[in-house]
Amino acid sequence: NAGVTQTPKFRVLKTGQSMTLLCAQDMNHEYMYWYRQDPGMGLRLIHYSVGEGTTAKGEVPDGYNVSRLKKQNFLLGLESAAPSQTSVYFCASSYPRDYHTQYFGPGTRLTVL
Amino acid sequence: DAKTTQPNSMESNEEEPVHLPCNHSTISGTDYIHWYRQLPSQGPEYVIHGLTSNVNNRMASLAIAEDRKSSTLILHRATLRDAAVYYCILMDFNKFYFGSGTKLNVKP
Image (cartoon, rainbow over all chains, first blue to last red; front, top):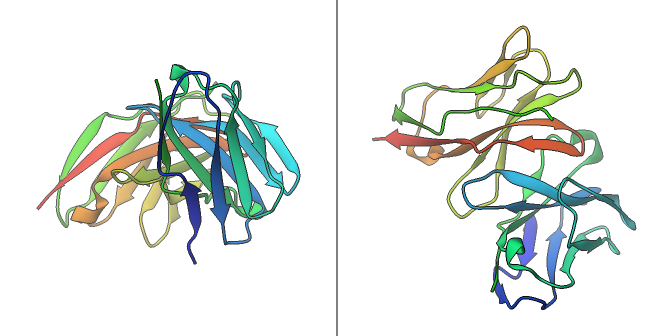
């Protein structure tokens, strides 16, 4: 099993550009999450999904959109990137009855110039 | 919002026990206490969690104070592979309070 994978690993954008980060998991998890981690800080929840076709806002959702068209994939979109969105983005997944145990991907390092 | 407070860094000798403290004085009754760790350039990894009682698993032990305002993660025998940032987190499903963590350095 690959676990949780994220694409791409690195990306540099110019202000105003758009992009989509892809998260895929092969553990048949219902729940999926997107977090951001700024330097020297812990993670903050952006959006999450409790199942295919459903999404919800987390702590810091502004400037991001998400979609969960397939159970195994969770996409994070930036419509108009801003320098404040420079961060490392982590995707995670879990079973519904065990949301305490989240499995994280390796992260995507995004720089917005 | 509930918050956690941890020391910025700690040091341990290899094969000795390590006690990582966490204060969470504003914890609510439904918040679970979680510990995750993060190795350099990797995503966080689940370590252990609990609500009120002490917990043990193959990786560590979690000691929770009776008033739940503090907890301690115990690594029974630290190895070099345990060097990481350890996060004490309060979680109630989609409410997830991450602190800045404790960087653990393990000396051979």
